Length: 157
Image (cartoon, rainbow, N blue to C red; front, side, top):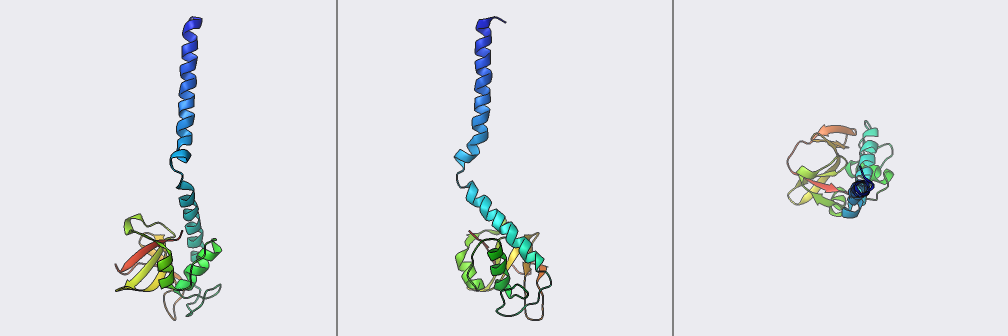
């Protein structure tokens, strides 16, 4: 190879490397909203793990932990320990979260049970159509299949 042919070859290799470097970095440049989404996912994963760690804790109306919970008390406690603040009741939590469709739900999202326009129960989505929740008097925090289609999903920002 002559010196004249070698220079363009080196430049084209350098150009390919630069193009690859730009492509690798472009996800940060093109998707500036990705960092908050990742942070939300991290908080949701932590909240889910915290809720599951409370398995067997007794239901007590108005309780917000750490030993007993009502439904919204469990979600409040779990997200607070994960670094996010939620209001006290299921209805208030419903109003504070971002609405999402069932098809875009993720582990750690909140599941709100409603009758008509009134939200009466909340749990944390665990995947596979199941939630961690504190269901009712005489029961304990447990993992349970979602038993109705009358639910809405919310994402904590």
